[in-house]
Image (tube, rainbow, N blue to C red; front, side):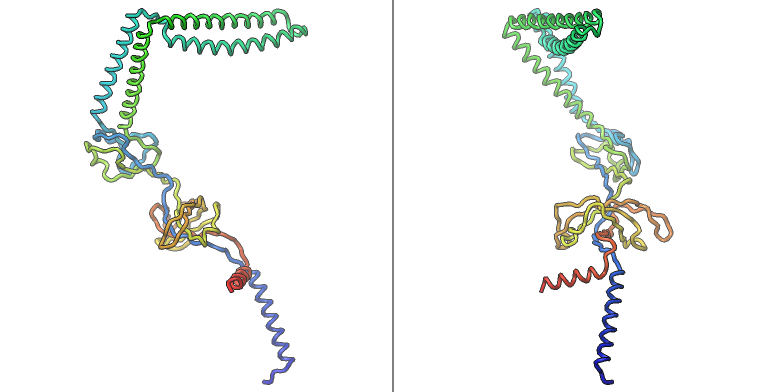
Length: 363
């Protein structure tokens, strides 16, 4: 067949029409841009049960896979050394108190001369000064009102009386403080120093007892959060000596579950917090049966399969799904892929244009 100019124009017109139709179709066809991140499902809230004070396991109150509430007792340890140290500290405190009493008796200290009383009076003085300022303001206000004949004379005199009475009380306390201060200054310096040193020894020993009691309290191992106790043969620990830092169990809350995956640098720039996510788990039939959203993007990189990747933490919004008609719940340890929806309804022609621009830039 001989190709004429007319045939050539017809073919060209047909091709142009075809390209226009294809362009229109590609403009109407849209897809979602996704980032696929491999990773593992994990429980968000896991509280390890760690021994904070060494001792022998005396009693066990919780068993494996048992539900516990926050502050529930899991087990109790015994440590005779701590008990002996507490008893010795209590004895030393009693001795220090007796020695202090003897110093007071020998020097005929009056209880009113105790520095504690001075401190107490100073605290009372501060309170009284605040009261005086308060009543002074009321007095000034009512004086102005009385001058303008807005209130009665009785109201004004009542405010004036309260103000004057508070001033007298404040002055009385100040006089007591001055008298006590002078008497304390006249005390024998060496005796006073001995008394203060003994007081300091008593204070240090009391702090030691507080520390020992806190160590004794740590012999009671409690759950730091509510959840299920996961332990390996916890009953076998009875009468076993446990050292500080030993982890004997975990308390796991099944309420919240996350998916932790790693995205490469080329993908992480398109991932943002709050983006919609579906999951693909090969262990179960079907895909995209669990939904979630991007919760947090980590900044600390890690090497995965020889590639520098960024951690992506994804919140699972609904743990429930159906596999082969049976109701199931996703759990920690399952491996899968998170399909992150980075962009929605992108025209295919736009992606073609991006490829053309990218190819042009490379060449």
